[in-house]
Amino acid sequence: MILTFSILLILSSLLLIVLVLMHKGRGGGLSDMFGGGVSSSLGGSSVAERNLDRITVGTAVIWAISVVALGLLFKWS
Image (cartoon, rainbow, N blue to C red; front, side):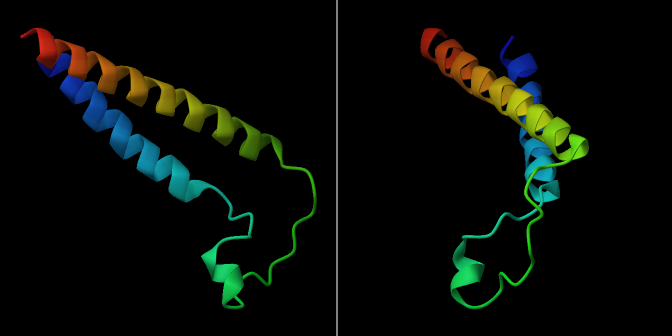
């Protein structure tokens, strides 16, 4: 059981890294402070961006559940 959740945690961690890096920058970060935020935003987000948001949130939920499950499994073993 621990091995299953460990593999799930590793896979969801790698997928979460990739998904977060695929997001478009929205500005307001540290790069804007130094003049890096010159791009303009057109308001609403596209369907692809909304789907990417949903997949990212779903992956983050799977990641959090596997972290909690591993914590409980290690506590009881």
